[in-house]
Amino acid sequence: MPEYLPLLLISLGITGVLGLAAATLLHVLANRFSVETDPRIGQVLEVLPGINCGNCGQPGCSSFAETLVKSASSGSLGSLYCPPGGESVMAQVSSLLGLAVTKREPLVAQLRCGGTLKTAPERVHYEGPKRCALAHNLSAGGSLCPFGCLRLGDCVVSCDYGALIIDPDTGLPTVIPDKCIACGACVRACPRNLFHLVPRGRKERRVHVACQNHETAAVALKLCKSACIACGKCAAVCPVNAITVENNLATIDPLKCIACGKCVPVCPTSAIQSTFPVPRSSEKEA
Image (cartoon, rainbow, N blue to C red):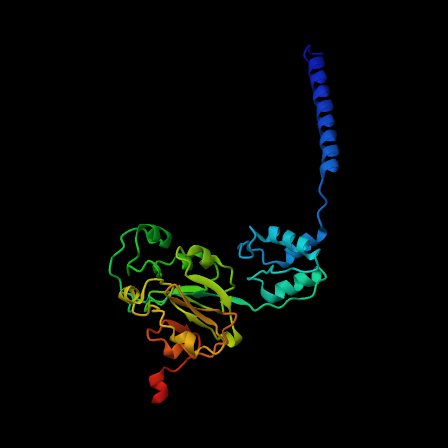
């Protein structure tokens, strides 16, 4: 028998005993400090889209599932909502948690800028990397409007669903409603906060102010011919008081707006746009 064999066996024995002791200790500690997980969290997680977009206000679907289950203990989900999943997903979640289904109108992304290649032509050529985030930090953009779209397409790149394209005629990103799931990726990608998630509206009828320029009328028009000049004509004709004019800019509350279209033809710069045809005053007279 080799001289080293007894020492080897002793070493192996000691190692085995220490390993067994460590495993036993870990098992005891795991049982002592384990946190019992509500099985409904896993069930809710299976219902959620699983794209971890963060548009629900949580880091991802797993965190959102936990928040939903915790909120359910109060008897309501409150304002918690999954925009990409929409009503169908939230209905399943409510059913799993034994709550009444709360209806909420589906959302769609909307660009609030009308600075096209024609109305806000390029005055300065940008030579840097074709990234909106970088251009925003380095300059006011090709049109020199510090509030307008930079037209470099960070929003298009951020969309995983092909719901955004750059219109070659206008130079602006265009939302394809049928493909948009309201994940909010474009909202986060735009350095100038030009994208907003708004209710789709009945039969996709929406009206909005395609401008976020807070400069005075004279300055705004020098930068963009379709800029809002805060004249207040839109607010004067709105039958439901959905339009307010503050800080040199008109805004339309999508929750109040009934999409009647009365504000569209009275806007002198065509800053107010609609997703449905509205005849201008001259067309009505003809």
